[in-house]
Structure formats: structure tokens, C-alpha cells
Length: 229
Length: 304
Image 1: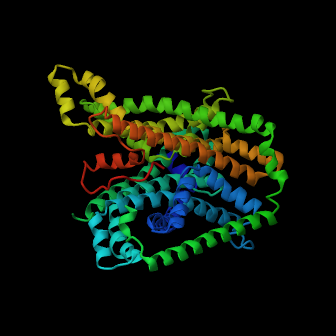
Image 2: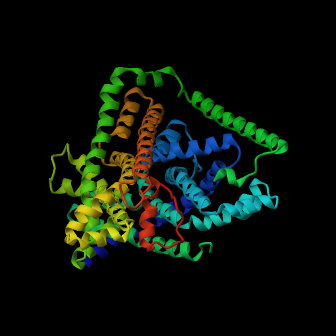
Image 3: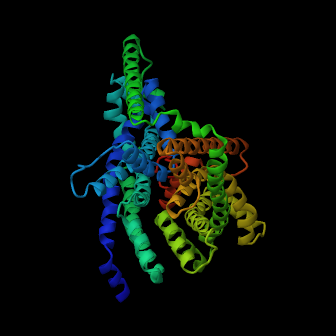
């Protein structure tokens, strides 16, 4: 017990998990927005938009997340000079890397969100869309008032899976120097190789604590909010 | 589905669609032009930066060794993950509680912990206790991390594959006098594995992508090689884009194979249960967890 409290006082473990949670929550919001837009493009009647949406999903889904994140840093920041934070602020390097990590995580997971929502659209019975068209709603209104509300409720379980995956994948942000849980764990393991198992145990349990409630919550939500048919 | 969301367009709608389509093409071209001109401004489009990919040296010294590194780690991990997954999956289905419980805990634990943490941990562990020669150390850590995570995923697949079989299969096997072990080995598992084959091939994409995590622990795979090319020819951005395109092409073909396997399994119907689609991996796990509740939508997102 002494060892664990010593590790907690020496290393910013809670701060590291706070960064992980921040990365996850902010990226989740952006991924949901981009993903919804891509999903709408894929089911739209306009061929060009369908092709763009499908292309986005197929390209992003097949690229390793590590490459996406490394590209955000080495490609966008170092080579192209894309600044996402005020370059004069004292924490500009950290802020930049944090925001670039969010950019990478959002773009990557948006493709999975789009797939989840499209699978949600598939749970909506044909009669719903047909009825909406029969009362004269155009495509966007059919989508907004009839299909998407039901699709989101049908997509809760897969969206929960994306959120869990996003929580775990946010650890890749440490590759560009974001001081999240994996970065802190790496540092601890380098400094204290004598207590590897304890260190790993702390972080592993941390992730179990983060992901388990999300899984349980989304499973129960997907049942509670399911459209009764 | 998409065709049901909108009417067959009339003349007015056709005009509208054409306009929106044209506008989006123009917008897309503008974005492309903007990106390319920015790249040009930063001197990223010069032939000196792109020519190297046509030379033999870059391929023989960097890209092919990197590709071999990526494929080697993926292949070893797949083999070990299948082995571990079948063991854990059968363990979770065991009638004995002292096998079922530990298997369940192991599967849930390794599914909840990020692969990267497992790689960092095993890398430090193997290094500290000198379990592997130092040049094999990164490979060993990558393979361990991928095996533990994907083994748990395969275990869930095995379980949902067996659950997807009609109850009569199990009952008939027991009725002709097979033991529970033989029932599993001779009747249930072969059918479950046939049913989950497409999902396993789909999981290959995940494994191939996750080998890139090895970059973080200095494993010599494609991404690491891209960085080396970038340092050697000072064309980091083109190198990253090129390697990204390689990944997309490889993974796209693997997903095509997964879809083909699924169609073939569906057509030949060798299994009493239907095939589990590659994009149903997590769905299947959720469905089992929710005890086949009718709330979970069909289809689903592919494994991440």
C-alpha cells in the first residue's frame, strides 16, 4: 500500500487520466459531428456526396491511427506549419500537440461513427421513410424528423463501442508528446523498472474503471431508448 | 436502404441534385487546389521529394523491409491470437466454473486495456528481465500486445459463434453419446469457426493497423521506415502519405477478401448458424452480452 501511495504522490497519475478523459470527450464530440455529416452524405440522393462519404470512410478506416496522429504532428505541424494554438503562449507546444491529437482522433473515429449511424439507419423500417415521403417531406426533412432520430436510438450500442475504442485509442496521443496515461506510464516504467507490475496494474485498472461503466451505460441505454416496434 | 429515403427525382429535384452535385464537386476541387497550392508553397511537391519512391534503393532498403516487419508481426500475432482465442473462448463456454470464470476475467481484462499499454508494459518487462535478445525485443512486445488483445476478441467471436448455432446441434451430439469435450471439438467448434471466418479475416485489418503501434516502441515497421526515408531524403510528408496509401491499399484488399469469404460462407451454408459478418464483430459481442436482446440493430461498425 505504501508503494502505491508513493507512486501516486510522485507521478501525476490522476492528471494523466484527466488528460485521457479530456482527449476522449472532446474528440468524441467532434467525431460525432463529422461522422453524422459523413453518414448523411452516404445516404443522400446525390451521387457525388455518396462517393465523397464512402471514400472518406474507406480511406480513414484503413489507415493506422498511429500514422494519422504522427502525420498530424510531423506532417501538419512540422512540415506545413499548421498552428492550432497561440504561438506566443508559454504552453503553445503542449496545446498544439493536444489539439493536433484531438484532430487526429476525431477524423479517425468519425469514420467509425459514420458506419455506426449508417447501421442505425438500417434498423429503421422501410415504412417509416416511405410514410415520411408519402406525406410529402423532402429528403432532408425525412432524415431530420423521421429517420435520424430513430437511427440514433438504434445506433446507441455501436456508438458505445466507438466511444470505448476511442477511450483506449486516445493513448496513442502520447506518441506526439501529450502527457496522457500512456505517456505517464512509460515514464514511470523507465524510472521505476523494479515495480513494473504495480505500475501496469494501476493503469490497466484505470482503463477498466473508465470503460466498464461506458459499456454498461450504453447497453442499458440501447435497451431503454430502443424504438418499440 | 438509401433508395427508400428519397423519391425518384422529378424534373425539379433532378435540377436541384445536379446543382448540389456540381457545387460539391467545385467545393471538393477548391479544397484539393487549396491543399495542393499550400503543399506547393511549402515546397512539398518538388520531384526531389517524390522521385525517391521510384528508385530501387528506397524499396529494397526501406519499404520492403518495413512491409516485411509489418506483415511478420501481423502474421505471428494472428496465429497466436487464434490459438489463445480458441482456448479462451472454449474456456468461457466450459461447464466447470473454475475454468469459465478465469477465462471470462482474462477476456474482459484484455479487451478493456489499450493495446499500447500492453506493448509498453511487455517491452519494459522483457527488457528488464532480458527475456529476449535485444534485437527481437520490439517484435516480442508488439506480438504480445496484439496477441493478448486480439486473442480476447477471437474468444468473444468463438463464444458468439457457438451461441449462434441452433440448440439441436449440441443436443444431438450429446444424444449420440459424445462427451461434452467431443461435442465441442467435433460438432460445435468446426461450425462456429466456419461462421466466424469472415469476422476473423476482418480482424486482420485491425491487427495490420495496430502493428503501427510498434513505431512507439522502435519496432522497424512501415511507419518507422517512412520516418527514416523522410530523414534520409528530407521528404517526410511525402513518405508518410506514401506509406499511408500502402496501408490503405493492403487493408482495402483484406476487407474485400473478408467480404468474399462471408458471401461464400453464406452461399455454401456449411454452418447451421449464419456467418458473422466482418463488421459485426463488436456487435456480436454486444449481442451475447445483452443476451440476444431485440434492441441491438443488425449490421454494425467494423472493429476499430
